[in-house]
Image (cartoon, rainbow, N blue to C red; front, top):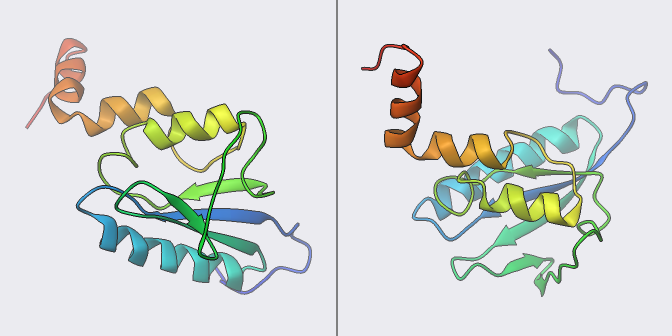
Length: 132
């Protein structure tokens, strides 16, 4: 698969969300940077949204204000490159759903269940799926 832009592919505006409140903040910034580079190489416009350790969302140094059903900075889609709590636990996914922004990845319920390893194992066990 080539990482070069495909002239026949529709270009999207993608809000890449990186950073976050978890202890994995720095790893998320690195992941987000890699996502940004790949999207740009594929010919997409990227809006970089950095979530601070304090939970504040910033774009180009300015705080991002959010209004339900109003989208996110004109993005066609959001790509959460977040790790750990406040990123992979369904909270960001729920916020994006409230903003009516399509996003990459699992939804609210799947994210919440999968981050809670004990709950996930209990659900799998209840369905007869072996656990290690």
